[in-house]
Image (tube, rainbow, N blue to C red):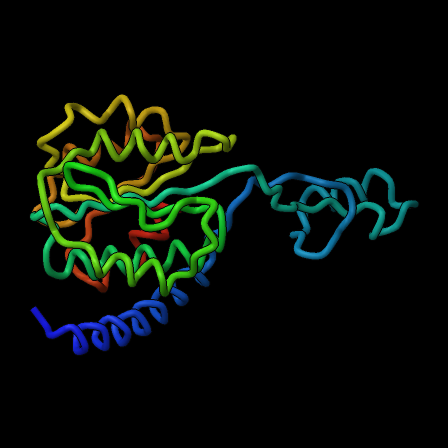
Length: 237
């Protein structure tokens, strides 16, 4: 509804605020990769005290350093895709919450992540292998027009296609759960290794719970901007 030059300035200001919020969320301690137990200690490792003490008691002649056991985070060939609803029902604050989530995902993963918007069709805001920063992702997000019905099954299948070359397939779906096109999406959700779901009001709570259950992920319901950080962190565990 704004004039073009005013709209561009508004998006620029909003993006700066959103990226600042997103950095705070991304820095609060979600990590990717599985923990692996190793002998010794290296940078970025975490000492496993109980196991180290057991080894020292069994063979004290080796000394403390040679008995250390620690955890390191083993990076896997994994990727992440965020999928958010931009149908008519997602107007107002919901789009701002989607923008905060997209920026937080960008700050956290840095690479190997994609962002898809969907209604009755799918729009790629960022392909997984595209070197695009959060500023450009937000610019594309705010340029979207709310439109159409909701085909959740289509976006889940599209997300899986984007993740096909990766060993671990993780995703995050933002929706009010009101799909009305494309049929039941639960089978597609089950093909993710982990699919988190954030529901926006008026959320179809049982549908959102079922999607997360099938996707072996967590789900959260968000009413306003104060709840989005906890919801993102919960769904990235």
